[in-house]
Image 1: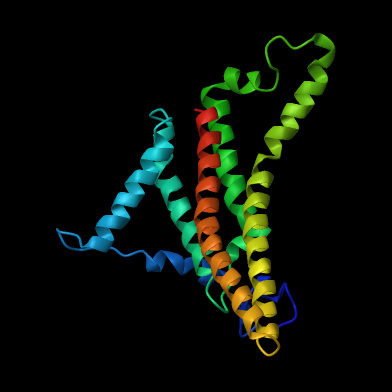
Image 2: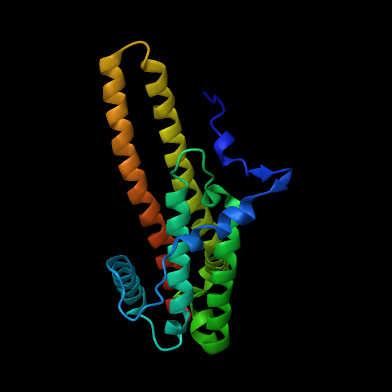
Length: 226
């Protein structure tokens, strides 16, 4: 039994070379595609889910914002599949790495903000100073709004990292407790094992919800700047 709680979060290596890139590229290979005119049930269900998700996120956007639809749908599929694959035994979850989540959050946030400054610079600057602000509070509010803008990608990355990491740690602890109790008290082991199964179901939901939340917040940032 592995006593190191954080061993599963260490980036794996193959012959001394980092394998994180291969793991990141693996989820897209699991997305089925069809070469036939009539799709099977799996492809049809997949397309229905993609259209439903895209419609949910793109309804509030104008024409310029909807040009990001392919990127946002690809983002939510990537994060969801990566989170779900990380629930498998002896697997690695890239979304538990803050560096990777920042690498996703910062370019998307920066692209949305730059688009806002290019297309609607007056509205973008108006966010830094709410209407009717007393004159003595103007410098403080400008600083606060600037900090709140710059912290948005960090909040995106930390939220995803913290939720996925916390769930994995909790599953590790309960799994270790189940294994330790199996030789001591069978009824208690069955109770803890039931809790572990329920927690696993919850983590599957969390993996999908966090992917949706991450993408939805990026979509909201885009909406504010288009």
